[in-house]
Amino acid sequence: MRSLALLVAVGLVGCGGDGARDALAGTDWAIDWSDGCETVAAFGDTGTYTLGLGCPQGDGSIALQQEVGNYSVSGDRLTTTPTRATCANATADTVSFSMTATALTIHDPNGVLSFSRVTATGGGSGVGIYGCFLSDGTFAKQPLAPL
Image 1 (cartoon, rainbow, N blue to C red):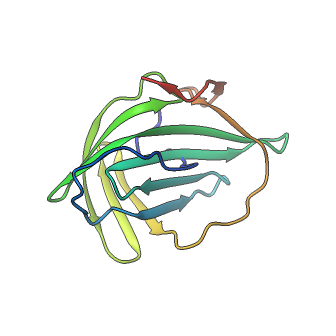
Image 2: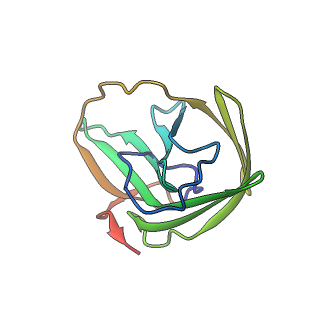
């Protein structure tokens, strides 16, 4: 399975939180990959997040792997706990991170991921198809389902 940070956001889910605002709250981040795929991480104001990976397919559709859940920040540690995902094996994860006004750097066990701040949403096209990218690189259609 691709790293937790290799997922694309389609929207935010409203969940309760303690009201405390952390540095990530209300921010959106993206990585544009050379193969045309895009990773997006969106952090809500109430401790919710959406992570996902979107990749264009030959038929014009967009393969979407997505994870939605709750997050918390403690110092330079980010903990994500998925509640719904398109990959049934999504699990809680804790990584270290740093950020500036324009960059989010996540230190994942697989390496360092550098996101850029997203300040406007674009007008992408194509039908999104939910699923999971498998370890062999293939994409299996799966619904966004509770874990």
